[in-house]
Length: 193
Image (cartoon, rainbow, N blue to C red; front, side, top):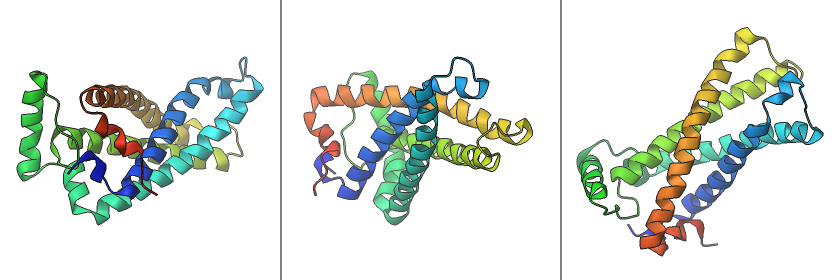
């Protein structure tokens, strides 16, 4: 499938996903002082609530993405290429990438699909732990919840945040490398209305 033939729902979801996840990653950099109340600037409180509210919106986009995955066998095989030719393309893509040949675009499984599938799983884990933390914070009336309930989802959220930073940087780097060779790949950010 050509890059330009991605379904328009996926293009819109990808754009929303990219913008929201990027905001979430950068906004969390200034949130650590909130609980400690050390040198907290007023904008950090706004950023903190924006992170939680837009985090909820991000999770809704993740759920919509999972709906598309559920509805499309082709998308499932692309994102989770664990069978047949889709799986064999992973090894072929790795071999070709080691020689400097990037995989072709589109919904074809292989290494790009496998990596995108991992990204969906990472963001889903991040969203689930974030939603649980948000619930615990709201139920504690906006103060830091008891450590017995809060530390587990917080540690998952923090661990997965590091994975997401690595994924985000790698994803953008690979997209730019692909775009240098084939600018059509950026059409995933140009949805038809």
